[in-house]
Structures are given as structure tokens and as C-alpha cells.
Image (tube, rainbow, N blue to C red; front, side, top):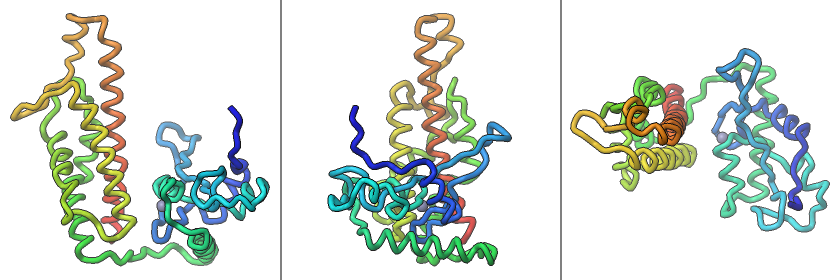
Length: 262
Ligand SMILES: [Zn+2]
């Protein structure tokens, strides 16, 4: 397949990340994009995106046909973002202007320069009391204990209501305007959380049914005895359920981390 995208080289991506200390450049995001992978003492996780200020290919946001391919893939056309904000500015309907993104980049580099001399201050992000109340409501549902329970749930037998009900509670809040944030960064996380919960629920509800005290789920031992041919299908299905649950947990942790910094 011909590639008409003017992508950045790995070296330019790394330089973009280094110049902002691997912190997202979106105003007040502050999310780090690099850290240790928990599975190994040598591996690392890089969650960042080197986003294009002017799109890498025709049709993308802020595409500028007057630029040469070399300009388009040069470091001056890149900005380092966390995954959420990278996706946000790369979206086809992105409304951010070139000037805005260049200003973010400049501010993020200035902040990284300042951090060379001063330790990071625990900053008060200045959310409204209304937003803080909503944040507290969400993080009361998605407490640290609950998230641990959710991501450790094996989904191999009867699933306790304590694991599933908070997800349904949250689905009930989705269309309620009293539970949408004014702060754009919080609202992005809430929408991402909703998307992950819907993805989980769509998958989970295909093979499960509710009961007052538990949700029926897949009894692998029984399937092994009665229907050995479908074991592979259900093993895969359970793995996907666990994966989708841990995606919900990852996003909910972002809200908890913000609450912890208030
Ligand atoms: Zn970000």
C-alpha cells in the first residue's frame, strides 16, 4: 500500500518527547507518558503520541498543502501529547488551530525548561466546585478498592453484583447533564470512561444474565465437561472481558489521580 503520510522518524519523536520531559503538552494535562512496565524490570511503557500540528496527509486536520514533505515531518511540525489529547487533536473534526497548538508546544517546552531548575509544584488545577462535586461522585463509584476488584475479577464463574452494578450506575449517569464536567480535560476523561464502560457492557451482556445477588457467567469447568469444543471460544471471550474491564479501570484511575491532587 502506498504511504502518502509524512510521518516523523523515531528520532524526531524522541526529541519531541525529551523537549517537554515526556509530559503531555495539552494545557494543564500534566500527564506523564513514560514509565516502567510492571511485567519486567527492563521494559518501559511509552504512552505518548508525536502529533502533527499540520496533518501528515491530505484530508487530515490543519493539512497545509504549501508545506514540503520535509517540513511536514520536521520537528517544528510536531507536538508531544498523551494518548487522549493526541487523539483529540488528530481527530478529523478537530477545531484547534495551528497557532493554538504552537502556543501549547511553546508553553510545554518553557515549563519543561523551568522544571530543570525547580521541582514540580503540586499545582491546584482550579476546577469549579461544581466540577469537583461531580469528580467526587464519580470517584466514589470508582474508588481505588473498586477498581482493584474490577480488574482482578476473573469473570470465570458467577460475577458478584458489587463488580457489575457500579458500571450500570455509571451508565445511568451518561445522559444526565448534571454529571457532565465544564472543564474540558475532565470531560474528555468522562467520555472516554463512558466509551470503555459501553464497550465492556456490550461484550459482557452477550453471555451473561442478571440475578439479585450475582451475574451468571461462564462456568468453564461445566463447559469443559459438556461442550469441550466451545472451550476455546469461551476462554477467548473471558480474556476479552478481562481486557475490557481493565480498560475501564485504567480510565477511572485517571479521575482518581486528579482527585488525589486536589
Ligand atoms: Zn494530555
